[in-house]
Length: 190
Image 1: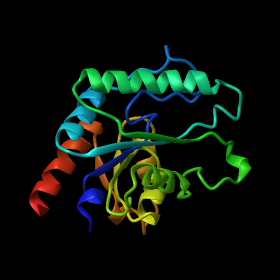
Image 2: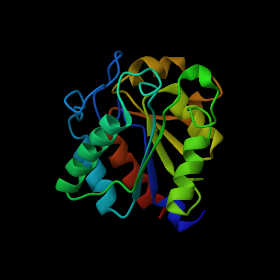
Image 3: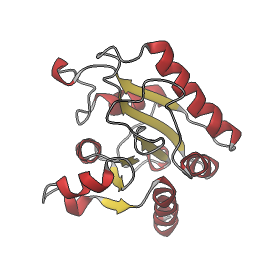
Image 4: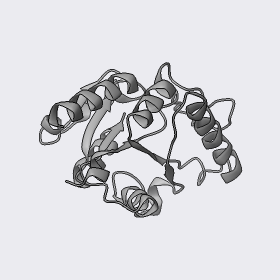
């Protein structure tokens, strides 16, 4: 395992960093960070981790918002993390609808490939934090270490994990708890 991969955390966005909505997050005003999430990202960043965000954003294909609105949401997220003393190193998103059969929509591995290319390092053995079964499937298929948070859709999705996937996934309350888990695990293996 390379040091670079060991120091990478990949985060899903909606339901992990910010509040999720079944009606999609369509504006900057609707992008509301979950309690403790911004500070958790800053803690990881300050501990030497590269932070990547991997998110399905089919609201683009559905016409619910445009690229400028999405960029503004991501700018706000980055600004809040920077104000807390941290940094998000790369954001990759899938703009396609579920029926477009693209290679980047989770659980496919396209977003992981984009992150690896953008950062110039392998994503294998990186931590991947999400609130959906698709996040966990992508993590396992990509050789990442999956953490499922119970925020967003996580509490419902935890019950949907298949018997072969369940033993590979650690379940934690939220991104702050995921951060604690990552820091403790990596220090223990250290």
